[in-house]
Length: 139
Ligand SMILES: [Zn+2]
Image 1 (cartoon, rainbow, N blue to C red):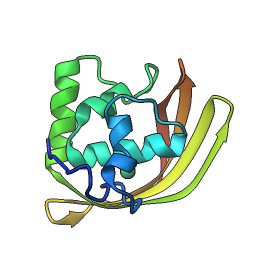
Image 2: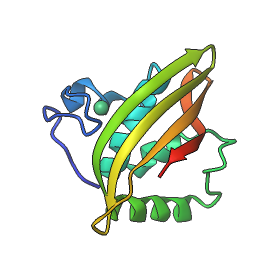
Image 3: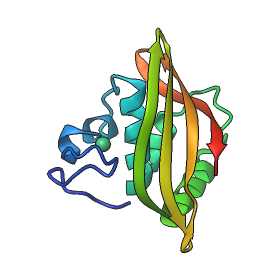
Image 4: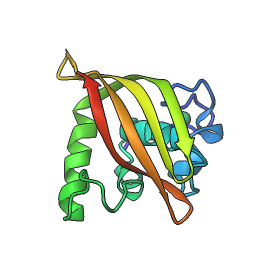
């Protein structure tokens, strides 16, 4: 896990300090919008905070891995092997307990571009926004 000072800029690229951006959601407070959750998941990946990624994945998501140890090691390996260059949120919407966020993640793996654009779906469950699934639009 990579530590970031609370006063440094948040890895999600909002331009805000970490403590005023994704840090509260990483500490367990519910993100108020699908966009805030999506940003917090990106910055969690960038920081190797895989617990946050797991905790914010919907129980019915196809991306869940049944064995938590295996899931942790898979996510950790992905985080270690990836440079998280940039996040651009292209579009977001919210309708009741459903939301979508379209974003472009600029990533690099083993010196190669691994960027992609995704339209992610989020659902609110028990007052918390959770990641359900997404469609790759390219990459
Ligand atoms: Zn952030």
